[in-house]
Image (cartoon, rainbow, N blue to C red; front, side, top):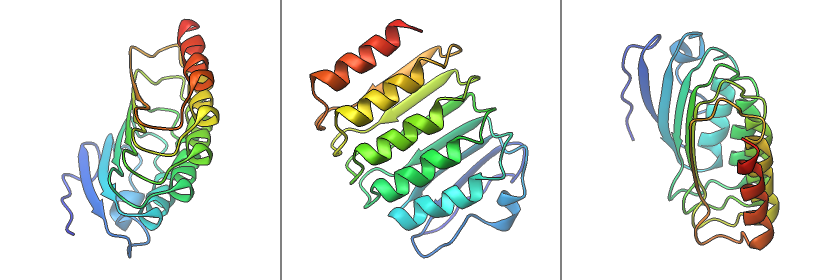
Length: 177
């Protein structure tokens, strides 16, 4: 797996994280005005590496993280959820956990990580073909209630464990926006 890095600060950065890597490059970790980070992490180790790197990127405005078709589970999703809490300047977020091992614990952590991102305008969360159930969907829904700046929401819970209770929780949350 390789990496592709645009201008490190103030523009777009793409990085593919290999499971053996412990973090993103030092140059990226030191950026405070990085506007976009996107990449593919393979497994929980890659997600934890991204968590370690995101802790210092408080001015990040846009993030795309694609974990689809990997072995990422709750451990990785919890790490990502925890890292989101410090990214209060985020305007756009795209998280793709499609076809992973993420369950309720991971979705709940993502929900908690989102709840204080009051500047967020666009959100895309893809949990299709995961083990997320009603508790995870409800946590995501509850987090959306606080995000009054949202203009675009895309949520995908197709082929998950989400039942009527989770769907109702999301629906009720969306009514309050």
